[in-house]
Image (cartoon, rainbow, N blue to C red; front, side):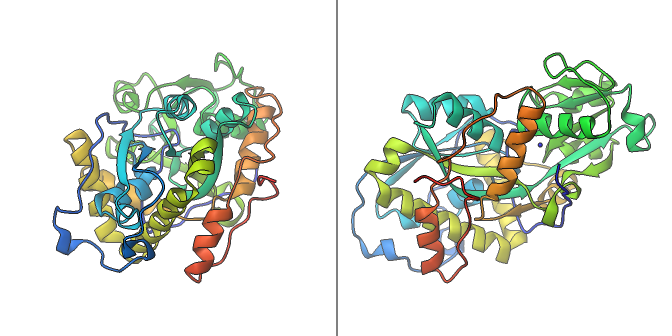
Length: 371
């Protein structure tokens, strides 16, 4: 994104987070499709009581780190909670464009990484968004050409890609470099290691052509590089306490939250049930996420990429707020962000209400909640 992180196998999904295989179109699997195959279970909203908005516009990336969105839409698990309120899904290729849509009033709720969440909150002086839930942890790896790089010390003098200047992975890599005692200019990426900001869509080709020696990237880009001959040198979860760190949040427009809290609560009921179903049915969920990727882009992930990528991501309702604060501190340390006031970036009131009703433990905002 210096704390200690290490990964475990997942039960589902990223994130991106700024992230992987960015596809464009946005599709929506209707509940009518294979309705009998979708997870059953009555919901409080199914009693027929109408909610306060006729539609809710939900943004996400077609990336595995956004598994909650992919599976929740594909399986109709979010739709089931909305009592007739229609979902208008929108897919995005980068965090800034999603934040722009939220700030511009064309998006209500979004799945997004921590860095754009922080940037969006700071640029609007705390007026435009709130983080209302977690979604995923993990799913970020340093993958290298094993012929050129055999140990972490071998990175010095090499060209390593990150997805975008100042994005979540870029900040984490710059922090890791600083902790090694090496120096890199955060603006140009030049220094003891050459940090090459490269779109995840083109990173695999750059790796195969030898123009980069490795990449610090999210899934499924990391597993794609491995399938092209790369080797995982470091899993970012190894750097974090408890081997967990936020890779995907759920955010909401403050205006929409104020005017349609019932709709926001219903969406959160859907995301909580989606994460529960993913963790209980990892193989089915993996297939569902891949089906949604295919519906959105016309192309699904190969098993050799999908399987290891899926294993490295953990879906979670917990926003892991303390890790977002750490990532913010790293960005400040790297001189990519002025020290921000993050007080009020979280509002977990509705999420904790939903969790409590479901008999699940409540989650913390690490002191960064709305007053």
